[in-house]
Length: 104
Length: 517
Image (cartoon, rainbow over all chains, first blue to last red; front, top):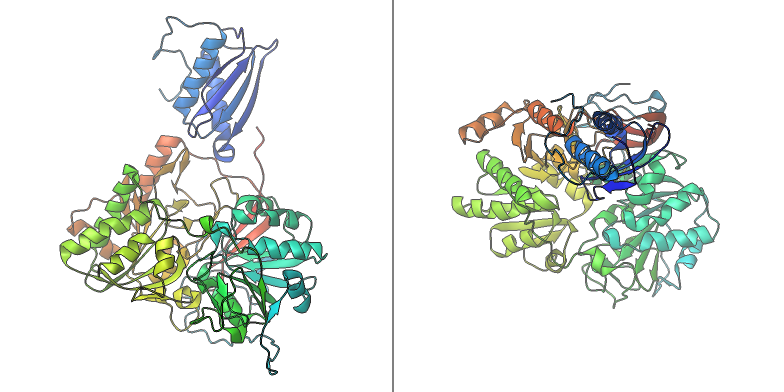
């Protein structure tokens, strides 16, 4: 999937995560801030990258502002931001989004 | 050297007789000599000890570089005294000060800057939060901060490990001779328990008040015989933040369920009988326990002999209803408690030494049947952390937690299984503040676990039909929900030491190394 325009999903509420995704020419860049960075930073990074890979996103600038969201929330917010940035608003395959989730 | 809770204490800290923690009763029976303060005789009749301002008090006390100044925290987040005194100290160019407070909170954020500039180079406290916590966690304080429980602080004073050069005692009322009380003024805090040891053991004692009353201000919490000077300031604190108007009882169903489970546990033990004693912490589930225990006491037709700890409305109400015979009070959390102490029959002020000092000849906590306490983290060895956040930054207070846990026959920790993404029940707490050997039962919103060291309690709960699980199973459940946390990364530098109640070293806090992704 191609990142066409800047898009955002999620909030800054506790237990949520706010994902901002912007177009980029070459490759993926990721910036992560989190209230639980020390313990879950690596896991957050892995979940975001896996979700992007599952959606076929290869280029983009992604900003993650995490307030202690669980993995399922992070996946949902990333997915939503990607669909919005690609201008897809109809017929979204909710529940069967092809995310790369090794636990399922 | 490894201590008995599996924490490696650097040898460099084991000097001047300092030892590692070897179990809660290791120092039972120790013979020691209490130090005496160096004081100035007030032989000549003197009608007033009033000085015009704090600066004059600092001059008269001869405060100079390297001295130790003490404060109490009865004004909690409404305290102005620490900042008023320290602003003068800074303005006078005095440096290298150790602040020995019974606790510090976010009201004292200005001290963080004094740490960075070397005006403050030592801290000895129970609570450490806000900007001070950040500054210390990032290695800005010149010497390691010493964290003690409330009882441990009095012990350190009475054993001579904490020598106070000058004590500044904020008092809601004082007369011109220094007799001070916690009530009758415009910034009432009820009791002055934390400051009592300071008044007796500091070389110089300055009472700071915003309400001067007629002599004699009796009965006094701080006696004029121990006071050198009295200074009147505009305000010693913000009354709104000293004692809340009314303690809000939780309506959160999760907290109420946990509180109800705590009372089921209490009622299942053999200690729940007529004449029992009880302590709860403030805050959510532990406070709500009072509500449910009242109903259970009425059902069984029993009364409580005495309650202790941070006192609030619900405890005072039970006293007035005749369900509690005595309240012994070392800290007030709301106006109901402030109004009641030394006023309601049976509601008495006690010193912090009486409350919790492990090395006097027997403190109240030693006679406790139950205590219900919270936790930031608890691990599979039942060790509790109440001082560092899961991110390793100092933001809490041992307070009376280790004291009450060590004394009570049954110590119950009540905490949600997870807070946001952080697992409260974990493999290994970041910092040990209360050793697991003093913790008997864990109540969470996902189940109850009893310390295997207490087979008697396991049996009592089973007999009462209370389902329990293991703490490992609770940890696994937490990790399944939020994921397994990575261990935090620290530099070698020790930024704080956690003393056990008896002065042995329970743990150290090291400087946090931020994660770079």
